[in-house]
Image (cartoon, rainbow, N blue to C red):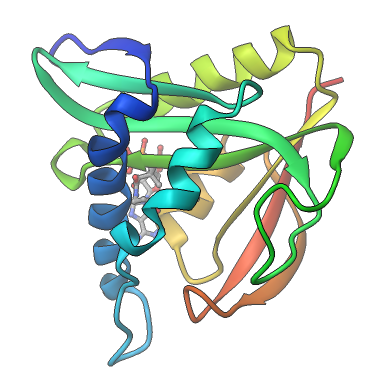
Length: 175
Ligand SMILES: CC(C)(COP(=O)(O)OP(=O)(O)OC[C@H]1O[C@@H](n2cnc3c(N)ncnc32)[C@H](O)[C@@H]1OP(=O)(O)O)[C@@H](O)C(=O)NCCC(=O)NCCS
């Protein structure tokens, strides 16, 4: 693998992060039902910026030279309330939420995602969380394989109106 450097991402990287997420959502056409359309990620840029600015959010960017190739980010987990502001419910003690792990498609299978994943889990541990939660599309076999190989276990499944897809909830216990 070419050398991949990492650095903390901030709100100044908003456009890069939005580009990563858009490329990821666009790739869901590989498994989503025929006619499914990816959401326009930039439409949510205010909310994304608010989460990034929050002092308890941690985000890391992977760089190949000067080119960003993916990122990971986590926040304190909260109860999910559709249509409500992201921080309207209190955080769940001891539980981190793996908010985003998005690697640009040309970099899949090349070690970038494992590097980002391990760095984030290490930081989650450093911050004293007991467990981490994430949601991924139930039909997303590649992501599910990635997480399950790293010890993540299915805890629930729920419909997501924004993505118009079923999502599987995974948790990773850190004890
Ligand atoms: C999900 C993601 C982060 C994983 O990173 P990656 O570099 O693709 O992951 P890897 O290639 O290291 O691991 C994928 C695993 O799935 C396997 N795989 C690939 N395609 C698969 C498929 N269609 N079905 C089942 N398994 C598949 C790979 O062989 C690999 O398993 P292995 O390590 O046992 O060989 C990356 O694909 C991505 O960013 N996707 C778009 C955004 C996204 O979906 N993010 C997750 C949202 S929660």
